[in-house]
Image (cartoon, rainbow, N blue to C red):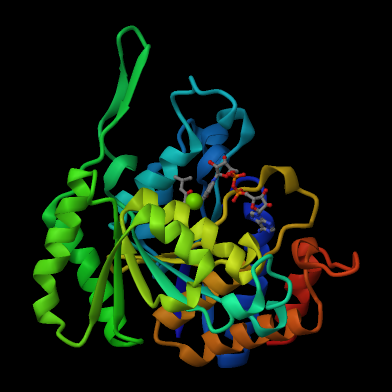
Length: 351
Ligand SMILES: NC(=O)C1=CN([C@@H]2O[C@H](COP(=O)(O)OP(=O)(O)OC[C@H]3O[C@@H](n4cnc5c(N)ncnc54)[C@H](O)[C@@H]3O)[C@@H](O)[C@H]2O)C=CC1
Ligand SMILES: CC(C)CC(=O)C(=O)O
Ligand SMILES: [Mg+2]
């Protein structure tokens, strides 16, 4: 297969982890006889520095002309520490998701056998966990009207959802549940929020179309607790943008590290594959960030092209690395760890 992949490395550890995903993907291409044409493009703070905005038109054109996008991370402390900055890296991420129509962010959470005893959570709680969050990605409070009034003394962020936005995400959730354990949990705050009541009412109305799916409705605060208490009781969880963002970072504790959590952002012909973590600025340039989340995002990319064997080859290499202790410092035991690039080299060599 010939694949054109837009490569958006971004900021902080973004370029370092992307480099490893490229190495591993190139090894896959060689082994399975594919041709990957990488097309680097600017995003985030790097794009602001170069051309004054975080998701330039040229980058969008490159994404649109590609079969998929592989994304690192964006964000820089100079913006995080300046609340008055009008142009921000994160706006680029939001604009990109919106313009590419990526309304469904698939965030799987699973355990790795070799890491079960490294989690701060007890083995018997997390063993067997295999759940997927479907986070709505182009609506809600991240995209509603925001601003200040009363001479800056009052701030507001509106949360808006349409029935159609909930339906298209929920449809993906039901369909995904049908391919798995047929359990769907709608995570909301319907006891307080009108948008959540729309979510609940919309999902309830769809239940009749999927009679085999067992649907539950849980409040987000309770899910935040149950997620670490009994994670293996969940299968597919659907939720709005903000709740999904928060709960999936929490869920990374189950697997063992933020540096292990991949995702796929879907909705149009062009999928975008990205780790769930941010630009981890403290680690920039230190060769210590875990590249596995980005490498596993590349696995999701191959699988989304229908290339299951290629995806499996990456997952097998990651599992072997974890078993043999070829890990970055976030997963190290007894102080023994490898650099970001060494882990990438090892994975590429073991494809
Ligand atoms: N998708 C994106 O590009 C995202 C960007 N951000 C941006 O990233 C910047 C930093 O935000 P933070 O809240 O610190 O989130 P972060 O995800 O960058 O880091 C939080 C913590 O997770 C761990 N971590 C993250 N990635 C890791 C990796 N690859 N290997 C090992 N450990 C890892 C580290 O302990 C780190 O301190 C901000 O500017 C923020 O806006 C945050 C989240 C997502
Ligand atoms: C930086 C935010 C806009 C996004 C985020 O935290 C995420 O997508 O996980
Ligand atoms: Mg996040």
